[in-house]
Image (tube, rainbow, N blue to C red; front, top):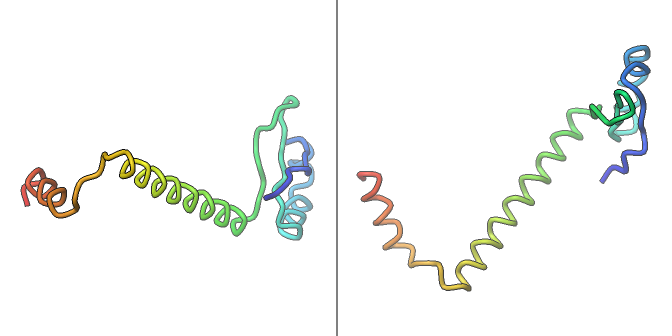
Length: 93
């Protein structure tokens, strides 16, 4: 995970766009841009963004599996065939 140590202002970024783009590409680390002293934007490569989205999707998938297992352990599950038949009836299939 990136440490977000690279912090700059939006004004500095605007004055040196090419330098910032080259740095983001070279380091593959996000650059936090602040406005009025508060973080406002994060500059990162598309590859880093996609990798971050993939990690988030994997985490959400894992959390869903864990929730389903916990519900099953709590007795909230039902056999697949009756559940699918009920779903089919509800959808008019």
